[in-house]
Amino acid sequence: MDQRKSVFQRGAEFGLPMGLYMATISICSIFADRMPALSWVVILLLVGWPWFVWRVQRRYYVEDDYSSEYATLWMLGILAIIYGALITGLITWGVLHWLRPAYVYEQTQAFIDIYSTMPEFKGNEMLQVMQRAIDSGALPTPFEMVTSMFWLVTFSGCVLSAITAAFAKLRN
Image 1 (cartoon, rainbow, N blue to C red):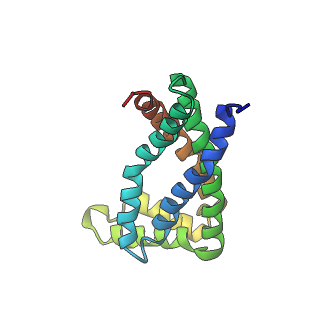
Image 2 (cartoon, rainbow, N blue to C red):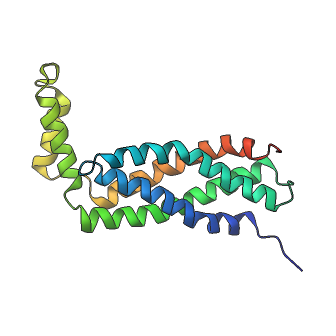
Image 3 (cartoon, rainbow, N blue to C red):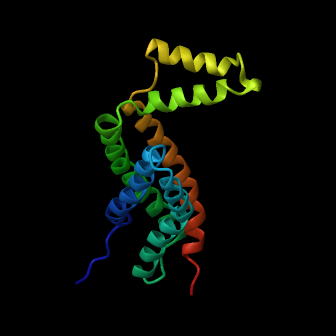
């Protein structure tokens, strides 16, 4: 007898491709300053993210013989995104820790350098605060960056999943 997998199990299974998809976005954005063409990859993948979430939900809906409720599809999306965010966080932490350990410093310094040349930002308190953060070593660590990213992705993914779940139930 073929048993139907629970939404929790399917969410975990869909979390791997979701994590790899989101990790690609993360890695490309980290290296976009060195290879500007990666910015286009990030934009395309971000635009495609709702479609990817919808595709996961739609696949489950079809596998469930079109009987899944909206809340089930929403939960599936949330779970796939949370599991994916965990995978993405691990990969992103590794990249920031081993491959680009000075990334946060480089980006902060580049921001200060660019905006300090603009007359309207001369003496701006934001630039002073950022310079003090660099001077005092108060920039976020890779773990802190990944933790913030996890919560941002999880929250935005919950909202996105709520929207795409409604479209996943539409029949072709």
